[in-house]
Image (cartoon, rainbow over all chains, first blue to last red; front, side, top):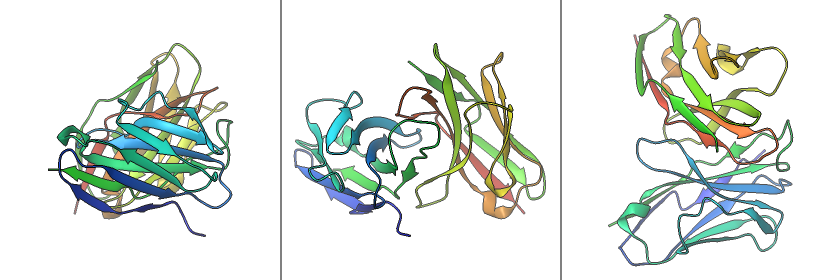
Length: 116
Length: 113
């Protein structure tokens, strides 16, 4: 079946602009996660949703970052007033449910964001 | 909070030779441990995981890892690598009662013919 998809695959934007990154999880998965992977580093947790609500947004770096999942499926990560330091690969993952022993997180290919 | 250290940023290895990727973690609570592989331009793929039970865990593509609680380590091994194993490998932990993954910095494996 279809995996997690993310669009766009690449996004180049100018400093100060607003961007939206989209994630389409695996059908039926109720939990959705966003991670950020800076160059040469491992992914870092940003936020996760259980259904429509953000269950943990402790990883969002500041109030320029916001994410929504209005219908409990597709999620959008929104970044306002982008800065060069926001350049990274943004990864989305989904799992059947959150937590538990067997709920593997399946990752999408990521969106590479470059802020010039 | 949890943290993960992958001691080697790059590991060159010849085809058909064994490889070991080292991972150490710290946590004040019980954790689950994972190894993921990331091929170029692809998403992370789960290789194996340790939740409980036997400390030797076998995964896909011939990989295995051993959980050592006293040394807080979860090293990944493969007895004979292939060119196709060239990729970046990430060790990760998750609180047993939690959801989010904490990743190490990654180890890039380059398999040479």
